Image 1 (tube, helix red, strand yellow):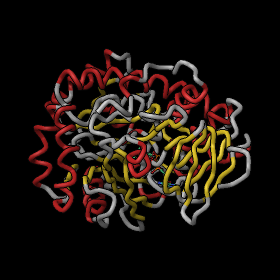
Image 2 (tube, helix red, strand yellow):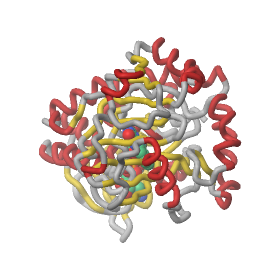
Image 3 (cartoon, rainbow, N blue to C red):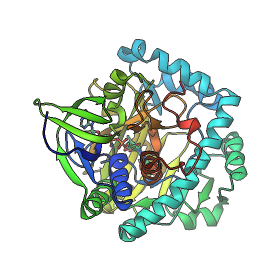
Length: 416
Ligand SMILES: Cc1cc2nc3c(=O)[nH]c(=O)nc-3n(C[C@H](O)[C@H](O)[C@H](O)COP(=O)(O)OP(=O)(O)OC[C@H]3O[C@@H](n4cnc5c(N)ncnc54)[C@H](O)[C@@H]3O)c2cc1C
């Protein structure tokens, strides 16, 4: 045990959630030590698609997805696969996923996600302005592409749900579509343009810049693996690999897909799993990409970044340990070439990341079951970048004992 005075707040995990939380806490005048075993944004937050997907309020589980599931699962390189070796471990998560798609649960999840997204947009705007990062954000919307009017119609309920939440979008066809993105394959006859969607110049650069802004406000970074947290007598003792301990008044667990290892011994064995995603980053001149494009029925997106043109997405349910299957990244690149015929597919760099996913597509943001000086912030699935600043704000509220900016009941870590 160290004799040093306790740290004010220790955050475990320096992905985008831990980084934005550190920034928001430092802004609120807290003394923060941020701890990560690998470095700043070295895991999932490093290579994602870079979108502030404020309109993505629909949970993954839906009757539509469940209907498509057999077709997708039959294609080992399709938008959603399950690695057979992982199926036994995954089954309880899948059952909860199936239940999350029932209309009552789905409607509640949409309402909760919409509230979090409204906060995400305002808190991200404040973070970007406060940290001086406006030059890293593109505000040119997203274009979601469909191969037929029937395909668009099949998603009508989802677009209607967004309209009810006052999310703006326009259907585009013909010359309007070509003006938003020239060079599309003619098979894409209709799209939906969502103007409020934003993208960052590069997710790793953006996360690093938030880390630098946090450190300029007094946050310190410590590279270490945390093996456990032991709350006692109003403080939390963090055991580091190598035997050292740190004592903090309050602690935040923001370890993304790895968080369960630290929360389970505290009495919170959440159904956290990972949706593994893949991408390829091509050189910047690979395509004249005007804005982020998504292909909702193919499960991937194409993003213009300063580091290149990033093509990827997909969901692979395969846990944290199985080796990557980069044939998935190859398959998406092949499709992207068919959809954007002038795309130059040479010289790409492949990547796989671990989305931290709870079955109802909502993150866990709240106190640990037994200890009010430990807060959890993980499970953001496809939306961690988008929701990072909002999560930081909510964690800061909780640690200060202030009423949170939105109702956190739907995000309770104890909801399962
Ligand atoms: C292909 C793909 C595309 C995506 N596109 C988008 C997008 O466009 N927009 C969007 O909003 N989201 C997107 N996401 C999701 C987003 O990347 C994640 O939700 C987000 O990165 C999760 O952040 P995190 O901080 O929770 O986790 P991570 O970034 O994984 O960070 C967790 C950190 O905890 C550390 N850690 C774990 N255990 C310990 C321990 N015991 N001790 C110390 N450190 C520990 C790890 O080293 C890691 O750095 C995408 C994800 C993928 C895979």
